[in-house]
Length: 301
Ligand code: PAF
Image (cartoon, rainbow, N blue to C red; front, side, top):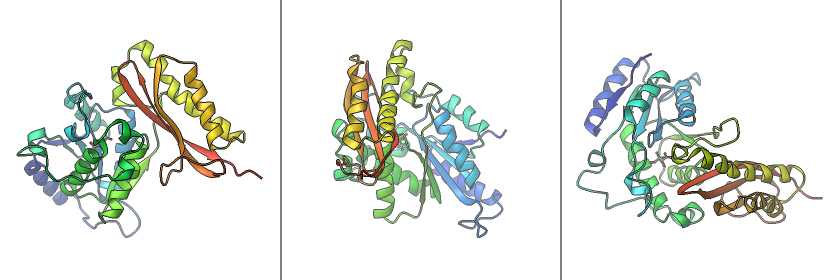
């Protein structure tokens, strides 16, 4: 087990990347034999769990160099959100990353990442960033895209692994890569769930034992949508089946539950057939959780 090198500043990161390049035997951008890429990145806000480790394991299997970023990005938190309270446990994160073979951890302080204050120029997420999560968290996706863009330039990876749990974020990052011609391939990674279905999230640590049980309403509702679709329901009917699960749990406050076209994240219509995505956001006590599930909607004769 090799403990990853930790860089706190951009200068340290550049030095560690240069050293790693020297150690890495083949520095071609990608292996012509279809093998390993040169460098992969996994971007995180820390408080790492098995879901993050799935990203790191996939990065490790795909690239010679694995860089993990750990930065609680202030730009993506709105007023009254949990920026201050967000768990910061870098030593535990680095220990876990050592077990999974990360080479470098880039963990800058706010001042190292944004010297001179928060950036004046930001990436705008446009309409896609104002619907669903964006309508509950105005400015959130501009903050996400700004930091992701910056980290892409600092780490210069060929591959970047992102979890499917943040489905809208993933879609926006893919759009940014395309729209800005960023020279990186985005690799989506399926959600990791606990045995009872709860999707792993750093914010689960806020839940009491009782709230954790209540939080299962999200995955149960998504399963209801998936099962209804499997039994022949169209999109709106599958949505109704999922919303009914929330009706039985008044202690969970539903922000939204939609069945969308994965390419556009707009609601599917009655006659939509094919792959869809059920997306949910809800509050359990003071904790806001999101989850999603793939749903296959059959064509009707
Ligand atoms: O998904 C996250 O943890 C964050 O939004 C990301 C991509 C690391 C940007 O801060």
